[in-house]
Length: 293
View 1 (tube, one colour):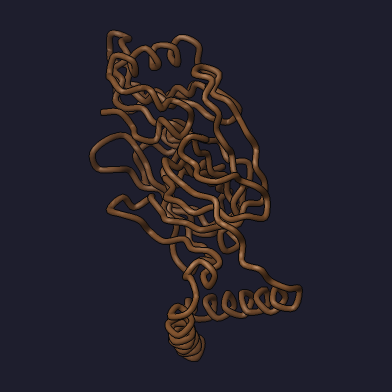
View 2 (cartoon, rainbow, N blue to C red):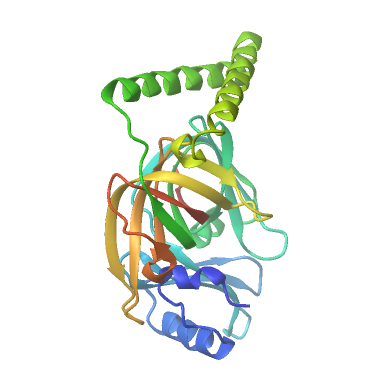
């Protein structure tokens, strides 16, 4: 089955298994990176990454059997993010249906746990085999792939409004930390704050467009745990090209409620002109590379 996010890295015209097999062959013949780990007496897990442009590429995951033959299990497209952050209490767990892994880290700014698809699973298996990984601190570089998105205008704010918003975010973060430690008063304050916010938004939405009220969002989307609907400010725009197909892509550095990560989208799938200061609205497949400390 073809991964629908292949178009995000410039392979919008690949539609058959035969075409995909040709691409896999090129990745295996001239890999950019290769990791292997012995997972049993007769089998070795292999992850091969092949870049097809600056920071974008195809990852091929399979196993060598006892005869040295590589059985390809699955493939996935990737974007190498450029903005890393140290997170506390990183948890990595294996998928039930295949040799793939998801990472979970908690973000105070969002107030929820983020689930991402682990990009460097070869390194993880090489280090930890099938044991569940849990560390107090680890560096995570997040990145997202998008099949469809649009550029929207920012919310106009003066300096006073921005300072007030920053102070409000810092106060809310402190309350969330206190609530997680069992502080009942902090939990009550957060509940009252959410009720007040709901009341204000309910009144404003009758006369204003919702996108002029909501500055950014990061909401789980659909049944896939690592898919999110986001609205975030564009900090930087980098046009890149897939060297295999020549398709033009955009690598967008996004600030989504103080969570900063790169998003890659095909130019044909993006509505509007991306510029720093504007906002991006779309659905992303969240991936992440964990630097194990």
